[in-house]
Image (cartoon, rainbow, N blue to C red; front, side):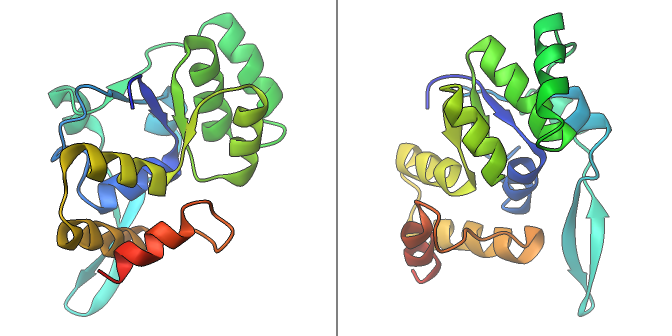
Length: 178
């Protein structure tokens, strides 16, 4: 990974579920969110307290202030036009994230199949949650036990796992069983 990564809500939530936003040095590959993701999406994780699962809201503010995440301040007119066109096909967060990634030459991180298809049709590099984890683990030399803990946390706290048709499904399953 060598460029900026624009995170849509699903990948952002998954990275938070595994405690990978503030704990990992993403400096060589900055993580960015768009205004819609920061201000308009409902971002939460599942947490267990005394055997009862509930939802806990995510506050991106501290990670933006620390530099672990960055926020796109404003979209340019071309990004706004593209966002409006894509919002007819995907939700506002994916539409805005894709428009920013396309116009700025950045990567898009999403788990939404339609957003992935749109990005690929525009030659926008796409990563999904498994791709982000795999690249991080490979680059940082993460051991199998720690990686399995991240996968388990994402499944438990964000309720995400790739479908059997996902290109990295077998990798995810092998990590899970480590």
